[in-house]
Length: 301
Figure 1: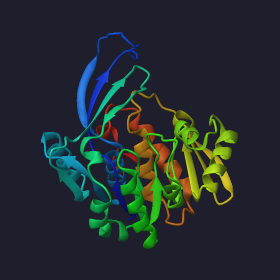
Figure 2: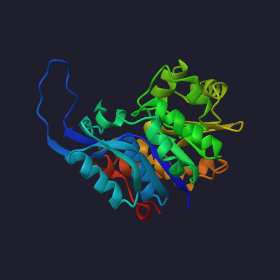
Figure 3: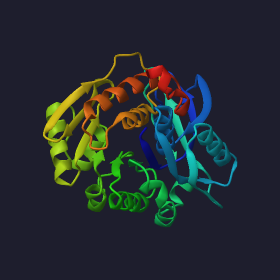
């Protein structure tokens, strides 16, 4: 069984189903409203846990009702939450997500407690990183905290995996040099490299740029098309499974969690791990919500 630590965000998601996305200055009716546990970090932790990985978490929530609710939900997934700080005078992170009839979404994110922890909290929980196979981070929490986590990981030969979402064009070079594997979508890959990514050829160019910046393995996700990877001199687009999507929220997070569950530490079975991630994310997009849509291991098997 793989062991992974997620350094990342924890949110309460407020979802609104609509026929189509609203235009500036327009008011439209929603079809359904519901809340669910979310945050890219928490989503990836739930996905890794449901996929059968021994999972720990480093992050923060507020001292409020949503924070208590999010912690309880993570505990139910058998995730080690000892590295999650409860921050006074900061609310738990929140995300507001409209979803249209095509299953596409937009996400507006308020960080709250997610930005109230840093290098000190990571260092205090270094044992959660040092004893695991992988450490996974995103960009919904302070970059300094991620750099610290990756430094600790590198010192103990723990593989570092960065999901650079939401995309940032000025990622510190230091962070990329500490990253063993990077997993952007095509938009995020373009934001980081300056190369427009829309097919395998352009994805390979973007991957080459990321290799130059110090990243060993590159995976670029293409939504319904699948996932492209470039590693150890070999590259390929692994096709997605064709399904009817109703909500793409947490599809990328599910992909990462399930891929990590089967990935060898030397990345030697990368294609097979990507296929496993594709299979799981195809189940996620057929359901509504973030964490409620993430499948369990027995469903995928």
